[in-house]
Length: 68
Image (spheres, rainbow, N blue to C red):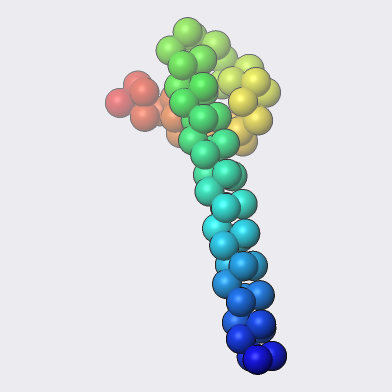
């Protein structure tokens, strides 16, 4: 029975980790979407990074992608 409880605890922890990762990915996806919109409005990459919380390097990559 202890093994079953241990396995259950592992599954519950894995599910929690999956939820946390999913929430983080969703927040990142939203920040990227906001960054693309802000770049389309001709805000500077520095402003976009500050507004979205994304690293400047990532914003610059999005800008390069936009200009390609």
